[in-house]
Length: 174
Image: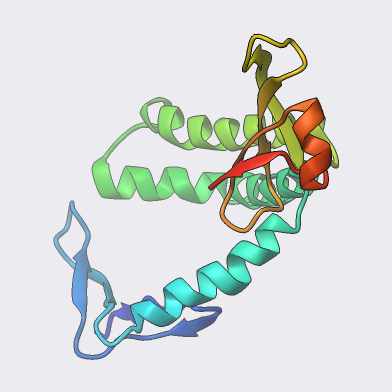
């Protein structure tokens, strides 16, 4: 019997590696279930794709839009929930109540993250913590923020007087 080849979705396309791969075995029966491999996959290409295309696409989304993607993932996981229980029983002999901690717990966690992200709406910039005084003069204060649209995520220290000098972006620290 020929086992299935698990493809890699890597650098924006489905790919196979080179060679015979590594077998994945059923932990109960010991039979080979599938083969995987990464030999021959161009990691530099994958990193470049992630930085230039994948990261850019994610950074263009608001918190609410990202939450919408998580909600879609939750919907797929919920629709296939019974299959995950069957896999858990076949591969480790667990009963539904034992598997529920992992399966339902993971789905619940993603759903909770989606709910929290939805509450943030169209925001791409969130303030973190209280404004802190940066000098004797109370006009010089700072507050950290997290901005989704930046190229690699940045921490901004913003002072009302200095911000005007930096076109509203504050002092940026990569």
